[in-house]
Amino acid sequence: MPHAPHSPPLAFSNIEDVAVELRRRGGRFSGPRRAVLEALFAAKGPVPADEIASGLGGKLPVLELSSVYRSLEYLEEMGAVRHVHLGHGPGLYVLTGGTEREYLVCERCHEVTEVEAHQLDPLRREIRERFGHEARFSHFPIVGLCANCRS
Ligand SMILES: [Zn+2]
Ligand SMILES: [Zn+2]
Image (tube, rainbow, N blue to C red):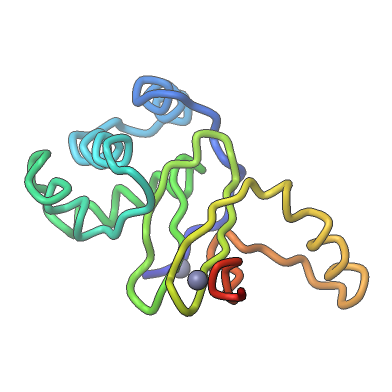
């Protein structure tokens, strides 16, 4: 999968908000795009594309995987969706809703901690000052040991 350019997160609270913004930018709000958004709103957390295509395991209509990928790519370019690699598998997709989220993953128990990006800004500043590197943990998480596994 090519990676979409990182556009700012789009603020929205429901599917119609996304539809309005999509049309404002001259995009079509096609059936697959709506269906993918419905699945992401219904999902509890980040989900893989094939789970979206399966209708979250049968709860929603089944979609064609290639059109799910195309819709996800478009929605990601808009800033409505992000994908994150929380393990060795494929990327998992999640709605932004205007908030950039970053992740901490425990390499022992695989617990995932979601944080708002601004909470990691002090760490980002430290890395930038020492190495000139602008760090992001929204695409790949910070991997280490959670508080439970450390103790
Ligand atoms: Zn990726
Ligand atoms: Zn752990």
